Length: 536
Ligand code: SF4
Ligand code: SF4
Image (cartoon, rainbow, N blue to C red):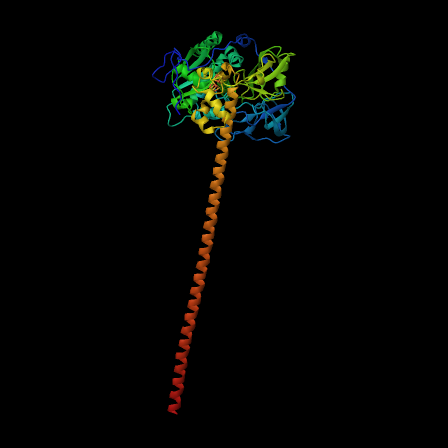
C-alpha cells in the first residue's frame, strides 16, 4: 500500500540528490523541551574498572559473534575474543585485561529482559592493552578494501543506537552510485547528550574518522548535519574542518525537531529526498554515519585500537549527579550510577536508550554494550502508570506527528488483532519506534511498544515460515532421494535378473549345441565302426 498523502512541513526540496544549505525538514516530528545542553559542556567522567566485565556476543545488528577464547584463558585489552559470523556481524574485544571466567547466558540490555550468551571476564585490574595493530598513517594511499577490513577487525558498529556493523555499511553496491556521506550530529532525544559531548570535546577525531570513511567509500562529499540548538558543537566542527583544510566537508544546520537524528529523517531534511519504503539510504546514494562511529573509526585506523569503550549519558531526576561517562563495554550499569553519585530516594525506573525510544530494565546488573547511549533514572512522578491507558478516541494526533507518515491508530488496531497481513500492507516496518505517537496520544496508549512487539511477531512468523519451508524442501528432497534410490535398486535387480536369465539362456543353448554335437559325433563313430566291420 502506498503511504498516505500528507501536507509536508513547509520548506525547499531540491530536485537533485544533493544536500542543500536550506534544509527542507521532514513530515511530522516534535519540538521537545530539553535541558541537556548544560550536561554536554561538562567534562567527561570515567567509569572505574568493575570486578566483573560481561560482554554479550550480540552487541550489533545481525548474527551473534562466535567465541574465539576458552574459559581460563588470559586476555589483554583490545584482544579479539569473538569473531563475526558472516557479513552482517561484528567482532567482540576484551575491554580490559584479565581472565575469561565463563561463557554463559547473562541478562543483556534488551526490551525482552531475556538472557543471552556472554563472555565473562575477571579483570586483573592492570588494564594492559594488547599491541596495537600497525597504524595505517597514510591510509589514503592504502587499498580502501584493506582499510574497511580494519574497521571490521576493530568490531565497530553504529554507536548512535542502531549498531549496524560499520564495515557492512561502508560496502559499495555495484548497482548504486554512492555520492554523499552524511555525518549524523543530530542527537535529538531530549535526554541524551553523549554525541554532543563528543562533538564538543573531540571534533578533530570525528573529522579525521569521516575523512577515513570518505576514502573507504571513494566519495568526495561529506555533509555534517547538526541541530540548530548546538551552536558550540557546530562551531567546534567548523573549526576542525578548517584545520584539516578539507573542502569536501559542509556543515549544515537543521531544525531541532525530534526525530531528526533518525537517518531517514536527517537525509530528507538535508537533501529533500526520501529513502524508499523498505529501502536503505544507499538506494539513493547516501551513507549515513553517526559522529561517535566516525571517532571510533579514527581510533581503529590511526591509533590501531579496537572498540572497547563508549560514552554513555547517565541522567534523569532519579540520579544525583547526571553526567556523560566514558565506560568500558561490559561494565555494569550500577558502576555508572555510582560514578554519578548514586540513586536518589525517589528513583523508580531504569530506562536504557533515552526517554523517547528507550526501554525499561528490571535491575542495574546489566552491562554497557555498543548500543548503550544512555541510562535514564526516572522517579515515580515521571513514570506513566500502566493503569492510565484509555481507549483510542480516533483523534488522529498520532498520525499528524508520525515522521514515517504512517497511521498509528490503524496499526494499533491491527497489532491488537495480530493482523499481520494488514500491518505489513500499512508499512509497519517503516515505523522507527520514535515514540512521537505515544507522546501526543491523549489516551496514553503505548503505541510504539505495540509496534515493536508486532514487528517482532512478524519477524518470528517469517523465520518460522522460512524454517517450515526449509523443512518441507528437506523432506521433499529426502523423499525424492528415497524414491530415486528405490528405483535405482529395482533397476539394478531387474538388470541382474536379465543377466541371470541371459546366462541361463546361453547355458541352455550350449547344452543343446553340446547334445547335438554329441549326437553328431556318436553318429560318426557308429558310421566309422560300421565301415571297419564291412571291410573285414
Ligand atoms: S493519538 Fe491516541 S487516541 Fe488519538 S487516534 Fe492516535 S491512538 Fe487514538
Ligand atoms: S513510533 Fe512509529 S508509528 Fe509512532 S510516530 Fe514513530 S514512526 Fe510513527
